Length: 253
Image 1 (spheres, rainbow, N blue to C red):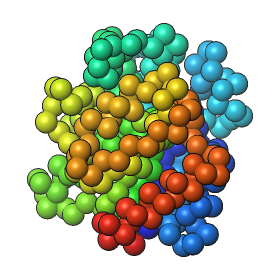
Image 2 (spheres, rainbow, N blue to C red; image 1 turned 30 degrees about the vertical axis):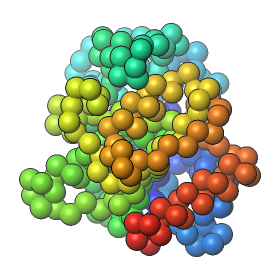
Image 3 (cartoon, one colour; image 1 turned 120 degrees about the vertical axis):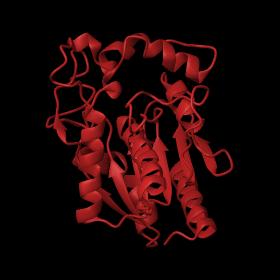
Image 4 (cartoon, rainbow, N blue to C red; image 1 turned 90 degrees about the vertical axis):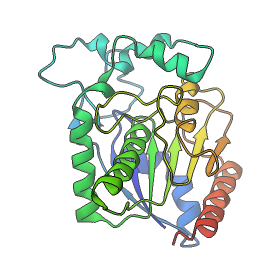
């Protein structure tokens, strides 16, 4: 199983390889999977107060506010999640957070899809996709794009499986607005694995993403920590077994 790996906002391919190293080791030692890491297409500067959190530069993103739209730094979603709302449902939380609009409603979403499609054509094929945080949102959006392209043009989707670490809901590939399960019938149809942390202050984002995936093939795993990637040996082994079982069940090699 060959994974395309998308890092979070202000991350990089190198940083993501370090973050995911125990998981990669678990699945490469028995030749279950291989991993291809990429940077986001946009060079970026972390919002004030987040510089230390993301480590040393360079920093990249998949999504950024459109340059032809006047924005302030506080309009960026990462600058505003310091006071994350807590709605009655994951969808209520995301609506409250998005009430003033966020970067994921901008046309840079279309640019990200074009960038990833080019990578798929030139560096693929890939069997599956992994996304962390912003990378998960973009990965989910790409899967919906593939589904719509298949229905409109008959282009067979490349990805057969997806893993989302601390993700948020996808964008609509056409309107670039966030998709929420109580507002849209759009659904990610391939099998998915959702790695969430019950202590993640943004866990409602992960749950809202889970809710737009096929409930018959969506698997949720709680590593009981925060907005991080699991690294302890027992948890990583359990995750590895989940992926191996999925590969066997869905015939992904």
